[in-house]
Length: 384
Image 1 (cartoon, rainbow, N blue to C red):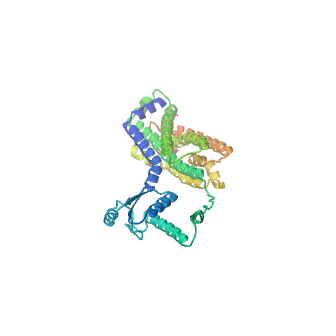
Image 2: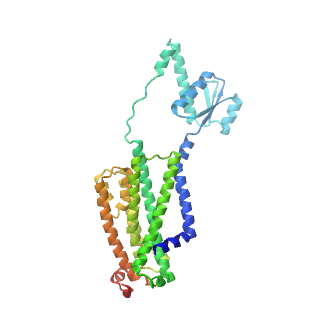
Image 3: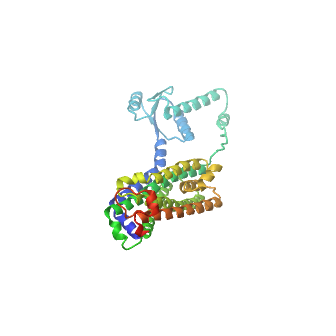
């Protein structure tokens, strides 16, 4: 049954196209920080009309100190005016005493002003009788020590945690919907009657969950590898070695979350016979997912708070909250074990409940079957 689910999904053109689109989107998103960073660090083009070589030297030195890239172009007034107006140049220094620019608060203008102040200050110090060495010492001011409240590693871990929350939520919603739609498709086409002549309802449900779950894990692994590969390759994100083990554990947590939510989705979907009813019957599942999603953002932002620790342990919120906390790092192993035990227990209960609903209602067609009747096995008593 599991193999059948995998083969059927892989043969669907929509699945293959969706996976390809997801890979492209993930790759672009992973490369975005580097692309944006490169755009932000664009080269300022500055024209120089008249002036001296000292101005060029100060502009170059000031740009280097500020970490900016510049291109200096010697020109006459007419050429400089034309190129600034056309936008080809960011600014121009006219005869060393005025600036021509399209915007008075641009980076190029700020750079020119800083270079001009440094040049005039050195000239004034020299006029006051200071030697070249004394002037150099006057400019040689050490930078203030910086104590960051957040290290680069902490910032990167927080970014990974946020991405993990969004990623796990969207994947759980997607694959739980697949499970529900698959159940209803089989009911509406009566294919399920042929299948149940060879296997028991519980076997069919187990095969569906294992098959789609296997595809879900494979897709999550693929997209995660693409994201890590692209972000690492472009230099947009560099994870410390200690972050990979928690991420692997978070991957295992996705399997637990899928087993719980997909089991509920399958059991509830078996109550209806039309695809347009799927979204309505899945409301309890999507509601739980949204609660876990919102709580996980709070946990990710405050991983050391007592309430955050509690939320990351309590199922089914822990299905997303614990991976988010793991991505931030520093989670005691006892928290992981307790959360896993509780999630496994709740998942076991969900599988039992889903199996009972599925067994009683999978052959039922027509109007929506109530939870009460399905739980009592009143729909298809002979299969109970």
